[in-house]
Length: 385
Image 1 (cartoon, rainbow, N blue to C red):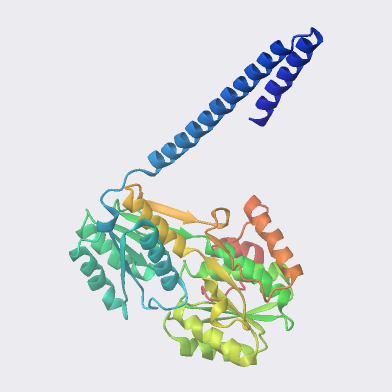
Image 2: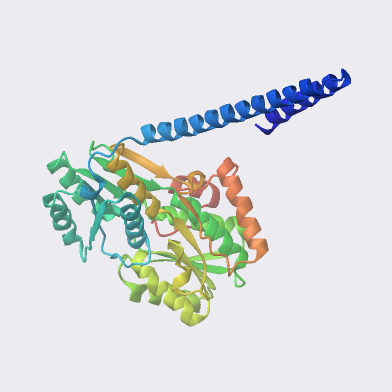
């Protein structure tokens, strides 16, 4: 716009100059006035066009998002936790934080029910169904069977489930999945660079196909950063047993581990406590867990379940939540290393950024299953035996 006005003014100046050479002062004034009028008209036209473009963009965005299926204040989303509980400092808590944000941003009603044991899954889901909730989000693969039963019983009820793809065949279930092996690889790379004893640890909440992705990624990252490092491994076999998590940590410290990563939900709180008491580094999971123990948490493997629960709630509100599998990975910001880097050196941060770029470009392919892992690293991950 500035260039258009400038061109008009320059043209006007030339007209004035030529007229002045002919001795017509009145003609020069008239020319200048005409030039100013033209400039004003050009500016107004360009402003109007810009405003029209902005309105068109806003309209297109609104049309793409859709129209709420009902008044947001009447739209209800309920979340059922697994046995880790809503204050596990991990994926249950993160899921609830995302849903709370959806409540604030979208003006919808949100609520959660905690499951103390697996026997609570079905009645918790039934409670939300009975109360006519529009979307029920089940947190964790442990709710897979209860979700399937409910979804088949209530075909008009919309469900979403985090960390489970077995229900992807159901038309009223959205499976929210993550490439957690990628974030685990990043923190494994950090552990491999930071360890001074060449021994690091990994504590898992439960061994299964989904959870072992953390293990494959972590061990791969450690070995790529430091081929001489050994990874000690332990399965707590529970997500709500911090005492056993702490005990496993103490054993690993005795064996020489100076960095331990947990993917164990509430059990991981015991891992962090054990690391703190023994003066070694802990690596958190799912959320940025640095606030739990700022001097102990080296970093965390982020899995943005908060984004997933927020997205599911919003898309359900606008009637555009699809069934099937939705996968969050490093290219979409669905998994990453924690933003808190107070305990990381500049060299380590730079190395991680380089690795992230290579994963994003495809130069590094992080293994997320036994076959791919063993093809490169051999049978050194033992928790899947």
